[in-house]
Length: 81
Length: 399
Image 1 (cartoon, rainbow over the protein chains, first blue to last red):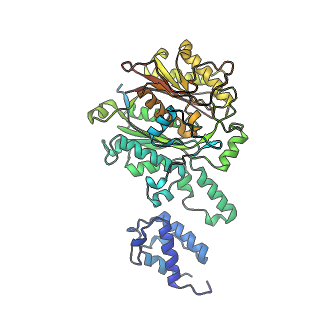
Image 2: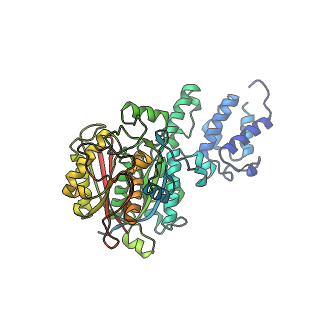
């Protein structure tokens, strides 16, 4: 994407998505693991779709498989936009 | 062979959440049909599951989860199974599965493109989604599968569960049916078949009947062999005495007019139960309020029960809650067991105009006591017949 997207904006999108998936808002921090948040592969597939729709960025299954924490996800997306 | 006992009952129906609401309200003559449909307006999925779990479940799965929660609690096994989890099975019937999810996915595909179709579309719409959800929630690790025979699905699922217990394949089976088809697509499709009532009134066996009224809901039963159930001292609701199934091999939607296919299933259920037709005190009819079914079914009951058919009450739950399609057989098994327990025949609502040849005692107006006294066994048949000519009949006995 040509226009700058801040990490804060990406974090906001990720957090909102996780809340929609049913994660406890009080538990969501950058360090929180997806396992602890009960976020699984189906949720991450949905997150990939949301990111694609918002930023036009394609996240592959192998990219997402390596993502363990909220921070991992934000950094992965920030590195692509 | 060891008897198969019903140790847990659960239902979510248009008459309310709970098997008791179904039984008591129908018996009191309440009708849950409004504007030509019967939704489960009182059901709130988040009473039974987290927001995350609700997102992961089409409505037909949510309804099954609600009914199963009641059934397992009723059987005293909400926390821990009374048997090896690998010997606990689950069979659920559904006619259509997650049709609302399917329609949403199709809308997304058309409006936004294939890349936006949800990854949850398949796991929500698949016909086995509800049985998979119950297996996971309750740790049922024995055989589990969905079964689909249109409007006979719920009854076939219970028959199948009975066989799983009799064969020794499982020691406990959670079984029933669920359906949530109240969508514009299903409405249009059933209307195109002329199966749906134009008047929006479900009045089985009445001369003015003009089709079925669509409802939604679920029912789940817990079944166990007698020895195990008695050993753990659980309250027993009744016995699944017999199951009979047959096929019309005749037409994709219409039953055989002579009722022979349906009668074969009734005879098979009686033979399986070791019960003579004369011992039956009540018939819970399939009674859809379609012109064809109610005529063929009346004929079938007469063929199978002979003169005795005229001596016993025959009533239709669908007069109170409409047609729950793949859930109907399970919901009606619950209604039949509770009616037998109270030794009453609940009424066929809305029936006031007789048609020539439809001359059984359909219990118009109000519930009536059954001839079976409190000391004698109370036996009933519950009929279910599906598009495709699938016929399934259960023989039930009150505890």
